[in-house]
Image 1: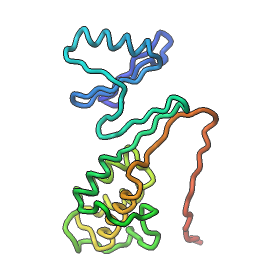
Image 2 (image 1 turned 60 degrees about the vertical axis):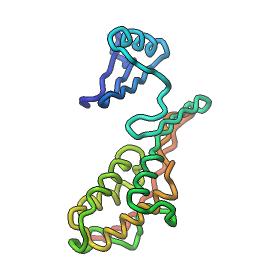
Image 3 (image 1 turned 90 degrees about the vertical axis):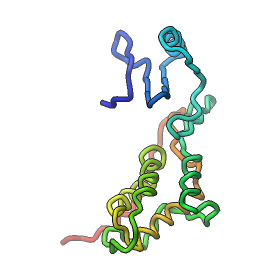
Image 4 (image 1 turned 60 degrees about the horizontal axis):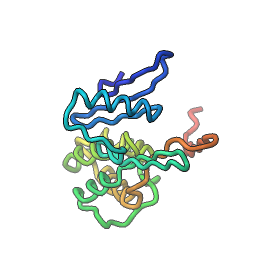
Length: 193
């Protein structure tokens, strides 16, 4: 279903290789070293100037692999640093949360400031790839990006301050043992009767 991801399967239908292609970057993920080596050999006979190495970065996402714990961590530290620099917030005071609980962006007044679509687009790229903890505020800012109010500007700055204190935070995948999923919710709902 993704036009940039290809899957190679074995005779039983199990995936053995995933190929992620973006412009001239290719990320190959395999179920075994043999599958990876076979692909690299076949690919190298058809394409010149192929440079292969362990993936450390792909489309702005840093990849750290820990073989001992069998985990892969993806993060966007350099991308976050670039956003902070572009927005003039390098060295700002960090916040501990992505948004202020006191601000209601649903009802916040709009139209008081120039659009913030550029910074919101960058925030959403981080949200969508490695920073899901700030997805809600990013979505709320998206809806008001063309004509933000003062509350939206304050929310963008708050989020930037949060990112400044957590630039290398990301997602860790894999590991040994059972996965323990922990969810925290602010269920501040009013009873509708």
